[in-house]
Length: 204
Image (cartoon, rainbow, N blue to C red; front, side, top):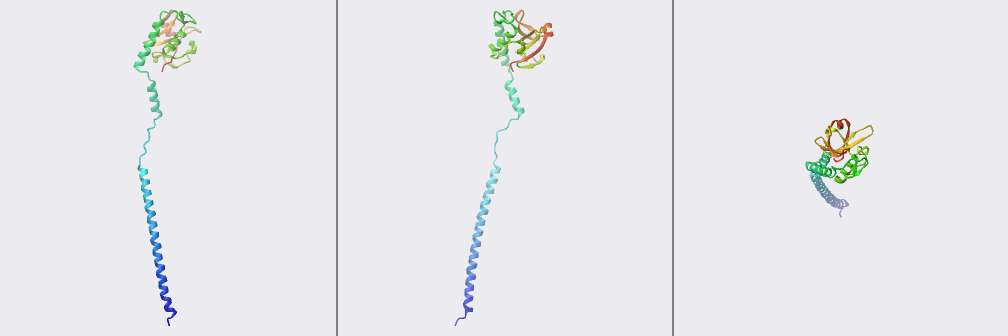
């Protein structure tokens, strides 16, 4: 007769053996999962490092100072522009040089100083400026007498209430509709030197 103790021992060993195999299998699975996870993380790290090393190229940003210089360069009047302007002014002068002065006039039958300057800018440069001397002195930008350039408007106080205007032509000359008609005069002529008021730049 077989004792129960003899039967229990093989069963116990069998049970331990099965349990051991199960534990080994589980441990192998966990190891495999951990390995796959680490590989994926490593791949992500590599991709991130590559992305960080990738150089992103941006268009250069222009500074306010550089922008101002570009604008000034675009607005700078070239030597050819000056020659063209001078020719336009001279063409107009030659058309009007025999016209007499007439207060309030605006035609070749007679013209006053502010009508003369208004017509020059409108007909030759398509620039509209006001009709009267007192309103023309408010347009453009003020310039010093020492910085006069071709085309600047030059103003004079010729009396207590009288005002006069002409167009600076360079070399100390300006053309205007004077009481003697359309002509050239010197800015530093004693009468105009004393009567000088201010100057305005229309073309800039």
